[in-house]
Image 1 (cartoon, one colour):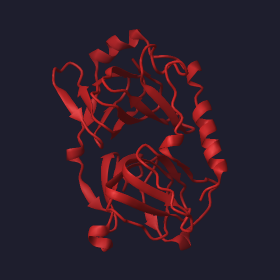
Image 2: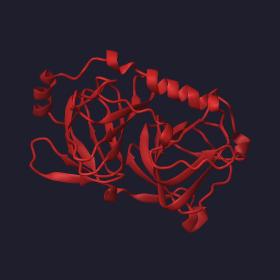
Image 3: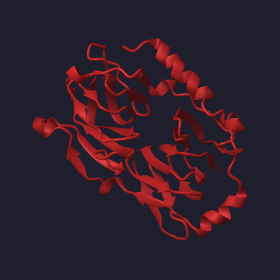
Length: 284
């Protein structure tokens, strides 16, 4: 099992990353620009094309379904891994670092000799390139959102392992640090949403978890040239700009935009959304 040091480290990063109170806020003056030139797109979970990650294992092979990007190319990519109940991989490494969030069921990802740490929905982990590990799943239709900053994403044997100084992190959902509107200006006053800052790289690309409460009705404003919002748990109703139609997005569905944008969203029950972007957002 990984040292508790890494858990303490990431919790500290969650609290300090970005210092969001000092970030520039999205303003009403950007909204007219957003409406004039919307770049919003959506993708449905039912449109995902699934393929076996290890065809040699037949029906026991995990499945991969790309949401955005291309995991076989040298580009950032977000995809879903789907596992059968009882799946356990042999020890292996990857050529690139990935980060992941549990979407359904329970997942264990750790050193080959580590005791099981079953992470539930909403848990977050990172797997550094070159480090031997196993991945196991418990529950029917277990899924995880997996993201890389560059590809291709390959599986290799442990005799090709290497150490580039990164260390893996496992954070159970119960240890995610949530901030409300009194702790970050990314959430407007009187809004009951919550946000957790998971990571940020040298290019100012970052990943955050957003928890929308039941009966939320509002907007997520973005100024980033990159924004992908992946539904991790629950359902949201999404209204495209300048259209009357509303589309229900379930787990595995997503929305995206480039440049100034507004995402009009409502919920009936609590929903969890992972957002990858390169600028601030405001939930209002």
